[in-house]
Length: 291
Figure: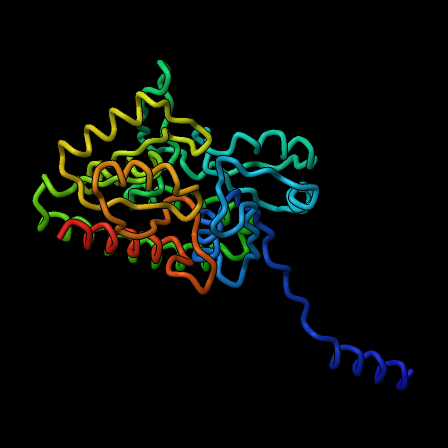
């Protein structure tokens, strides 16, 4: 009997403590994945379906993506029509859990495309909306993993504070720029919410989706508009083909202002590896073109 007690005692002495596995989260694209990582910390593992520098409009899921969804505890999407491929992917994966729509609660904007009113899905490009995204994701993590709710709340509050400080900085920077100079040529209409928040006018040959096509008449009209406004800089985007915007810029005399990251973060070695870094980088690039 004594030997048995010693054996049991020894067994408990060498057995390591068992920790709960991190919450398995799948996000549709890199911006949402990064917000989730910032709030989730070590309590989550996050996979972004669309890779860095990838286009969430034209993304084509693979069988591996379906398997990732099947194993997820939480799925985070933007909604507002951005991920037209997501419903099919979720159905194919067999996932039956709740899907977190990060844009819930956003006051959406829309624009006319080919006679139809289309909702603008790029709400995260305004940091005021980014706060809504962060709160929605924080609540989803807390609901899925109550044991770590305090950690999610603490990291979420710290992240929101950083977001608010950056938002205030951007507003102050633009106030020092004359309104007439706050006009920008980009590849597609991804900056509508940004422009509304910070007082910048964006022109683009393509609509809300990178898969849209500009007619010859639209291109000619845009060239005329840019000449009238005397826009001197144009910007390409990391996830889109730059040829059309370069063609338009050539016809107007505009020169390159740089590359923006409106809906796809860069790799870790690039200039925009996180949501907040991408916002600051984009803003600094735009401001430099206006000064």
